[in-house]
Length: 114
Length: 112
Image 1 (cartoon, rainbow over the protein chains, first blue to last red):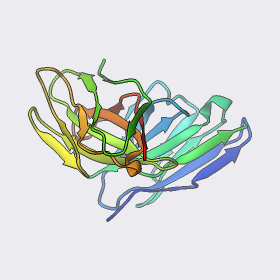
Image 2: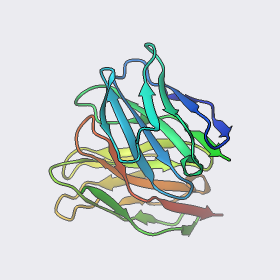
Image 3: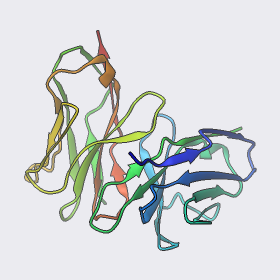
């Protein structure tokens, strides 16, 4: 069964450094999302992406964050200058098309900012 | 705004006990409703879903019925196993491409 994959599984970085989290969505999917889950808290929406542009973003997704689909398969989340409070599990998700409302989530990348 | 509320955890049950995790939602229109499960150290997996009122989603012995009149989507299982120990998230989505809004999660521990 096709699945969403994410790399790396765990990233440790120093405060102020840039990180790029990578996702490979399911191949025929058209809608892409990033969510995050701070340890012990609920899963929060960050951004959705369709047709090579951001469809919606939350207030968490400030100027330090950006997303990109650099080629036909990868979907990336960049944090320009990490802060301690960016430490969280980041989940990528994708869904097939309009009318198909199920989002499939990747296994997550645990980001630790020191 | 739209939101999802779940019963507080953690929930601890003995193997073969009956499970209910309550979930209620606030949303305009007719959202789709989901239960996602997160096993220890793993990501989010879709457990079941329902897209309209009175629909029943089911998977792996778990069931939930979309109740529009009570804005609820309670998760049930007749006989839990140790392997069901996980965090369960109730969630909704307003449209087919909209963000998923999650509840806070309910941690379930099943003891032998």
